[in-house]
Amino acid sequence: MEGGPGIGGSYIVILCPRCGSIRYAEDWRKTAKCFNCGYRIRLRDPEVRILYKTGRRDEAVEAVKRYKMMIGAGRRQPSRSKP
Ligand SMILES: [Zn+2]
Image (cartoon, rainbow, N blue to C red; front, side, top):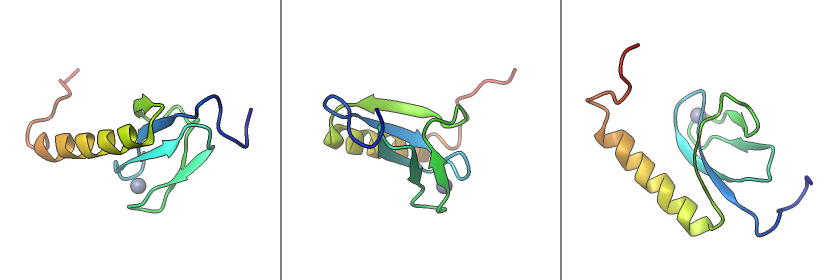
């Protein structure tokens, strides 16, 4: 099951648990290094938020761009409501 792409292979868009930076990674990998802080993100870690999943790389790239824009635009108003 590990060591290569599965059927078709898929991509996930993830949030770095350390710095909150967004990147995409191949779903079949165990880890992905954060481009921003260099943290080795464990893709199976429940702490790692998966924002998006797709079978196409270009779609994953687009999703990263979209989420980065959303974070940049929504910084002033927190989307999470208080408990
Ligand atoms: Zn990071």
